[in-house]
Length: 247
Image (cartoon, rainbow, N blue to C red; front, side, top):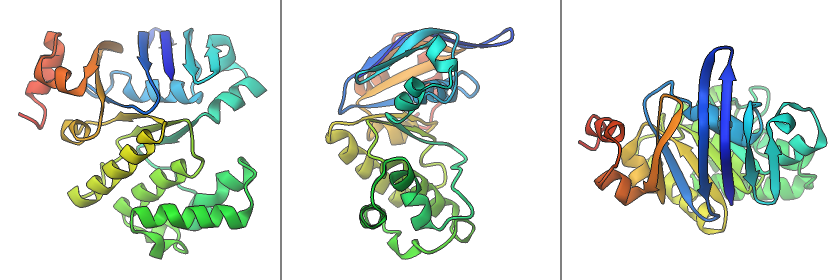
């Protein structure tokens, strides 16, 4: 379960997140849509514990952090961060490690898994997205789509309670996007929670249980995917969807 109450984030005189409130139960996928520059990525960073915030609380499973904990370098924030896996839009694969090295780095050094077990699980994941043949290549030897799939699988390798993704299909063709959709659905159906920021409403329509629309650093509305797409309540949501790729 993810519960966010009153989450607010400011930088100097600019409000990046303004009193965000939402709940999302385990086994569900939430898609977040909205114009660029309205706080979607900032929300993911706060959810992951990687960005401090000014007020409010975030609860993931049995762990809750407030604004003070989010700014502290403590055991509490490190434990909270272990709850989630995040895939950044710019991927951030380790350039000095092979695909396999990227995959096992966290399970071995953070999760304390044996190298043999970590490698075995990594190969299983790589096979799911049909890139096991690249396990000894370095990121610079991969295409953008291959790097994107490795980044997603690397996050899954830690079996996080919550998976956060920022534009996970931006470099993927329709076939590979479908493969990722299937993988994420399986992950959610096994009891995990997934939050996806994407400009592709079409992609989210095919996977998300719920959609949330953000505008001007606020969560304008959230509903089941079907209801938000068919009967949005706020005129700002209706305007955004009017210009989306679905219309």
